[in-house]
Length: 158
Length: 158
Length: 158
Image 1 (cartoon, helix red, strand yellow):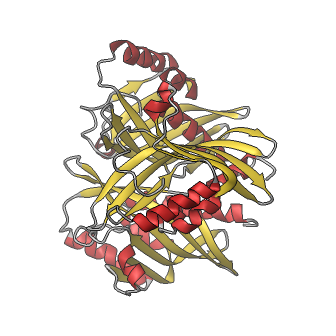
Image 2: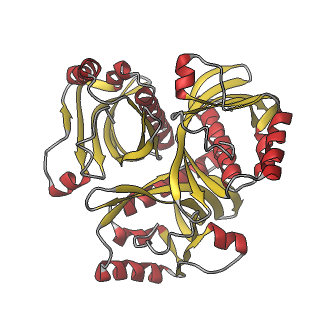
């Protein structure tokens, strides 16, 4: 990855693969996008503005990400639904050695079992990636939802 | 097209041109994105999961794609409306000789004559492209809609 | 910027930065995306089809763009809200010397203070960019909204 353009392409590809994994309901593969020592948080723009550390979801290791999948599969309390992510072009915020931070906007539609579709969530991913060989692993993904009303509905990962 | 990155760029450009063609209501140019021996299908995620071959729309030659345009222009039974596609970053699934398969997520908004806008369809395009010279032609486009409720509304191509 | 691909990347990056500026409510930085002798217009697809020059917003210098920001900050009559833009892949329409024209599709969600989220606007940006050094400045941005009902709601820039 010799240039900013190459790096941006690699990140966009990783983002697309991540989104497809969730949208295809292949949750068991979701932890593979993260490094072992990762942090995955879901929070709101209001919390970010107020400087609150509060998170709707807070998982600080790949093991916890895996546990989340198990819990979702076992409990299965949520009504059957699917997501569809559409992401914008990633912006690279910094590059330092093997670490890259980026930001990207997302919209997520939710499709209920009866076919009803609504705009479920919008926001941005604030990511830190570690480059390893040809690949990229997420060391941090902070999902900043624009709306503060997301919490009561959140079931599948974003 | 020497690299995966170049190929992905070419596909993204072709996807954007395809979407603009439909969103600009230039339906007569729509068949030009397809190879002569093409297949265009619209189906649902549920049908795909169940392994059903059933399609909401099934056109298996460029001639049939053209006929569809004529039918839409002549019949004109649908209320006047416009679409707006926004697509994600394409993922390349395979490359074999001149044939490339890719997948991309889409959201389509529908704008009615009175200005009402809603999220009309979400899903993914499963595409096979044939490379010919500098260009790409669709030999197969399977439009997999996330919702099964799309059929009663479908009028313009996706 | 030696190739179409490089140019498209640069435009996509500039578009993403523009969208983040608005979505982050950093309106004061918004004028920086424009050249001094710029034109910023918001109109509807219907107006474009009819050949009307009428615009919902018409700002024909960077100074007027700045004044718009001041007016929005001072008047502040609109209910607090945020936007989330998601853009497609830009299509380059022409390159002539240092001037480049492009088109890109957008969807904008609006998030009200109480968290309500709706699909606020869809359409396309018709842009002319001037290349200067490593950067790109907008000399013209025509925001063509698909719906004609946008006017009564328009507050923040698109």
